[in-house]
Length: 89
Image 1 (cartoon, rainbow, N blue to C red):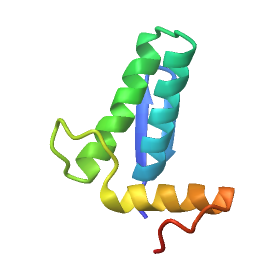
Image 2 (image 1 turned 180 degrees about the horizontal axis):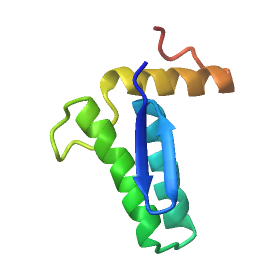
Image 3 (image 1 turned 90 degrees about the vertical axis):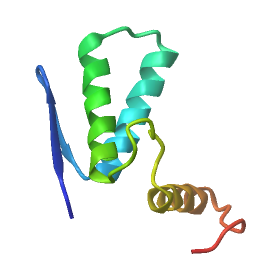
């Protein structure tokens, strides 16, 4: 498994690309919901998103999950809620 380390000022994380993407999206949503305007956190989140994008060789304007990763996330969330009748892997 590939691990990527992201650093921004005093913040540091080491994770696989999918987890980086999930954490970046969660951080973004939290900052938006609580009106947090912090340049360090924003830059940290951006670096995580950018590394995910580069790891998967996505276009520079393509900030979505890869289809494979999206299926992993949807399947896991449906399994946790017990609603996995919509799609099978």
